[in-house]
Length: 455
Image (cartoon, rainbow, N blue to C red):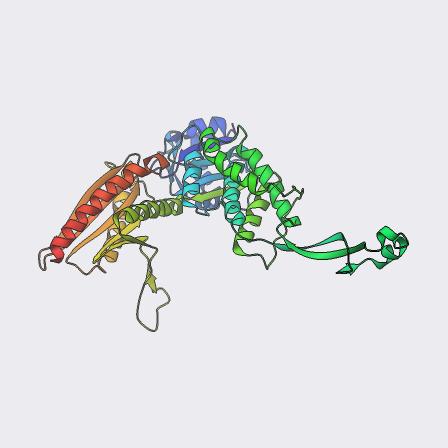
């Protein structure tokens, strides 16, 4: 009852929600004879939330035959909604990942952990979600990020001065002369000096607080709320960190102070630790995650690993700068392909687009055509920087299964040709090996063709 509707991201057209059914369930005080007007008011009333989540609602049909349809983009997340007839909160709209299995975040978390990417949810100040913690980013998502940051921390030297009190056989440091005078009358105490010293050590308060958060994270990751596949994959990493923290005693805390002098690694670890500490105290509000960022880094990862095996090199987010003066306010100072594969004289340009084209291969949609036209022009503008007359590029879209198609364009006036590969990549860790094998074959074909053309 808390969910108004749930749709996957990259949905061109959701299942229509009949206005009459919505009136019976959500808009009970609305006049069903003009339910179409209430649906439009409902859209206008919640338009800021819809825009935040990248969801485009629209009404089809008229009055009694009116229906509500949603189009979703690259975002996943949840937003609260209010009714247009009463202004009261009615339910949440949830956009879930495309690859929904037993756990809607399982594949997503596996990929983020593989990419070692810090892609955080974005939040919008709003009324709390009715669905509460059920549809907020799970705690084990933050716990896995914390474990990754912690693995980097334990490999560095994080030492601090600790002021400790010891008994020495000679006066050194800050001797407590009052206690010495009170006890020195005994012969056996004449050479016992109670003193305080500053010792540089990794056994310090802040590390003990980090250890406390590690125990919380470990408890969450080994609990039943974490998918089994993720629990199994983390066992060795948790045991490794447990050994590293053997000498650290956990110190309970509600917040770990972040200092301006902290290194980037220490700061990242503290920030993630505080998110875990504050998780249960934060309201569940409107949130989203941009999956286009995830997909871009995922495509870069696959091409980078393939390049290593093929003896090539991958330049990620390489900036090509313009050379001019007196820039117009709307002018681009540089263009930035997602990646460029380089081997010898060969340059292959790569652009990742998290769009629904390969989920709707035979859908007659002007929007799909216009979006693809823009994508095609963009990758061809990148390819213009190749030196040879035969240019290559990859336009990568998410897909349910691995898919490849080559499109060739040739200018008969000068014999210059462009070959663009439409590559469909499943956003799943289990498909990476197959994707790399296919990519290796295509790149080998490109290299062979390019060598013949170059000669």
